[in-house]
Length: 334
Image 1 (cartoon, rainbow, N blue to C red):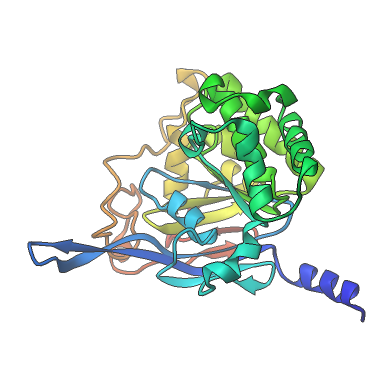
Image 2 (image 1 turned 30 degrees about the horizontal axis):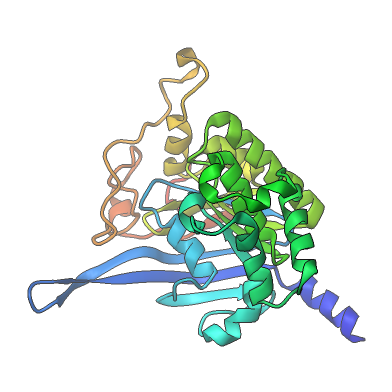
């Protein structure tokens, strides 16, 4: 077997991204002496696989650990425990120098592109900077690449001389996407990329992301609050609650027949087109999400679950079910 065939077999053997038992616990200190007072378990044992060219959507309430998980995967933060394997290579434990070549393969699109853009630099300079830093191109070739990036995301090459404040929110998000594409990545973490935009602009950005995925073979980890956006763009969906992945599966199956009560409650909380469409039997979320500093024992959702039994408060459920639809619930729905 030559090197080319060996590389292809490894690509088929390993998913593009594999996360195993990923945890991030932040220590909390109290008092004048700063004594340990506990740990915030932002991400607490998340595992999944993501195949190349597909989109995994991640949903959950604020405080569920979605964005923290995205940063851990990109090694913007070091995990407390667990593994992140990208293209068959373990990333956790690598030095910044060892990670540098991998940075071109993994990029992020932020929720608020304005805060991540330098207000004092022209857009063209900001798009060209990562290309120069990683020495992918030099001289006039960088300028040509910047113009290509702007046109790829639906902007004009003449926009390169403008500053961030001269663009609308939707245009700035297109610039954020162009910057993520600058290094020809394989994986892009989209951290709530449309939640701050108007509905009509959201649709345009989602269509752009789907078109780019088809043209460039991109893989997305799409983090969002909006159920409609996640349903539209995702092949698979993972539901997070208090740092745990409580359900994951094929998009159509999960939305059509959720197995975890939390997922069902999230879907029920999505406003219907008409008030008469809502069923009286649909579960409605009660109360606020508990503190990740002191998460409930057993199933973390049992304090808000309408179907909770005594077992739920003492025994933590495992992700079980069919290979394409798993739920962490002792008494799954349907």
